[in-house]
Image 1 (cartoon, rainbow, N blue to C red):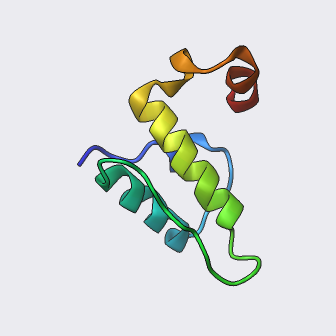
Image 2 (cartoon, one colour; image 1 turned 30 degrees about the vertical axis):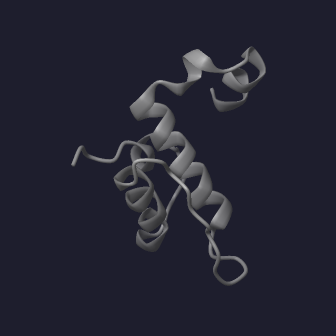
Length: 73
């Protein structure tokens, strides 16, 4: 498996457990996850890490509208 990039390029402090959805997503042929846990544990951070990792691995931005490209950059 290729090393994760998102945790190092996100610019935020993350907890170890927040990497679990990222690892699961990149192992799936099609990322389809439900992230659910207690309030305040960082579901938004987890989802953002998954999105960032997929963008970095698949070069998704070249297929996005300019508005989304600006949002993620």
